[in-house]
Length: 202
Picture 1 (cartoon, rainbow, N blue to C red):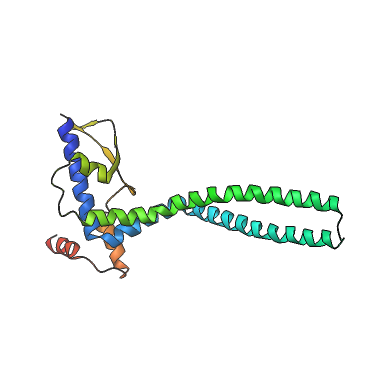
Picture 2 (cartoon, rainbow, N blue to C red):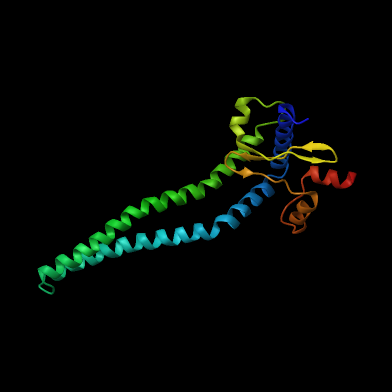
């Protein structure tokens, strides 16, 4: 039977596994999360950064162009009518750019905030020694939402599948021991004692 207790136990077990993974393999967890973030958002993020830089550069260019117009008009190089037309066009373009820049900046801040959210999540997890029970306060601190999928029956037993979205980092999929081995085979990481113990006992 699938009921509230079963859902409770699934969430509790998932949190225990995730917290153990984050605590024992913090560096790999961070790299995996950043790799996922980059693969999903890197092109968009870079495009927004380039667009923002171009707009900021153009705003400064227009300042120079308008200043040059004033000088040319004062020196009689261009007529008052020509000056009015060009300065109005430049000021209109600059006004539009200045209205877009804060929006782009805010979007970039939201994207890069993921780095801060990731570190905040790791720091919170490291404060927990063991997940014993799920209080409403504890769940609210760590979980954004839980997606419950339709239960399926396997060999006569109903199985419930949940996607748990953690605050700031989303759904966390712990890598298998083989996948962890791929990280350590490069020699860039020192194996934690937990993994070495698993290997010896296998």
